[in-house]
Image (cartoon, rainbow, N blue to C red):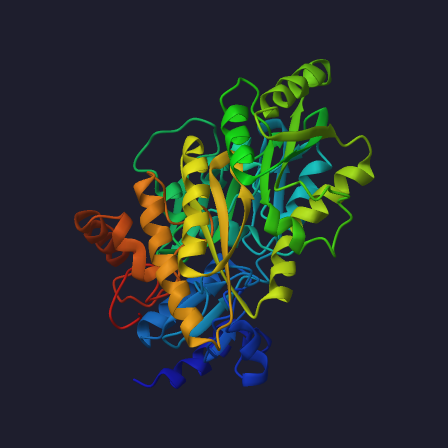
Length: 463
């Protein structure tokens, strides 16, 4: 059966305006922020769970690959149709169905942007804790697909910790409902947490019930500077070892600070080798004591100063600095290899020391920043893809980086996922029996292997 024959029944199901086949229209949906690209056969824009179910029924019938996609902010190629097939865009599944302040929950469709949800929840005095750097444009469906969390995860957890239940359509075309609408529930297996982080390989989420958190009365923002990254790494461990948990604890090394000097006026002394951004939130009556406790913990050997941002403008400037890092890196090197490794917080100093050694050994510029409170460090290798020798050194450096992370009891990805980029390395972290079980789960959800095939699991065909 020819895959092109599926287009006519798809148009009958969705309507002509919801099926794009012109390459000029489909090309923009064939890449993500990994810069991998492949042109899909078509792009579909369903507007209901039933339409998604109908699409999957046709894709199974015509043996056509189906790849779900939000806005393409992912960095691992998980939404790129590299084996061919059709893209299912969630753009029109964008309703905020309900904000329920009495029960602290929201019901939304996957195409809702993170920012739109935060604005709607804030009108009722709540927020949804996950807030990736791309929150202005990334979708909740994408946040769930990657379990992307952002800075606030250090205190409030990831999407897995803040999602109560899902409506989804499996690869076999069955509509399933997972989870509950209550804060407790232990009936059956936890399929909600299984689907979250599965990168669209098991099921397509069409509705999510999210747990909301009340907005805190007060917030304080600290900027701590250090002579070198080792002192900052030790400060992170000290901060996380005391009773007050910050709601954000972001880390930037000296090289990263130099990169963003054109984007934000940091007014930093040349002696600064690393910076921590620290946010503390809570009730008004205890906020000053909490801030003082965190500030004291940040005063480790090697500290230069710990100052508090006193105006909204100063706070905004600090966050502008953090969010300018990724675009700034794009301007100083033709390519960056961006890894989001995680180690236990107490092992951050060892990771930083190891990264310095790897940079020198392989002659690769490495820029480090990220969510230090979770031990989630974004390690950026800056390279020229046209320099064959440099790319060889970079891949050897990357190989050694992953060995170092696993040796430190860490994990290869905190929130960017596996997709295509980390596929060759996944079996270093996950043992063969566990991978075999995961493949069996994939087969149970998607017996014809049409739903985002060729992602996550290592295989010779896709390396």
